Image (tube, rainbow, N blue to C red; front, side, top):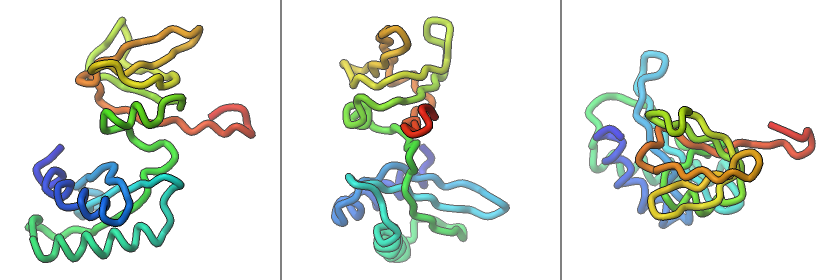
Length: 158
């Protein structure tokens, strides 16, 4: 997490909580030659356009008054989507029973990518049920990226 991501997260998290939202992630990235501050929010029942607008206005006001970012940027507030990232320890508990993809910094048991059903956390390990009901313990510290996998039940897969 960059310095700006961290500062904006510290500003955005309490704003989101006050609005009944969860701050999922913050990214400050260069895209198409311009800097973009992306803020992802969520809540039980999903995110509507109104939630993004309300958060955007509140965050814009806070950022304008504190002015923590020197360069010009575009603020985007959106839902993390159906394949939302899993960033916090509580995400692995909250989404127990859902399909997820976990990528590691270095191989574990000879592989870096795992796909399976989340079974929660045990100490500092993500429990992921693989094929044939094999349970894999993945150290949270080794996770490079993790996200839910959308499975379209009507089509029988993802």
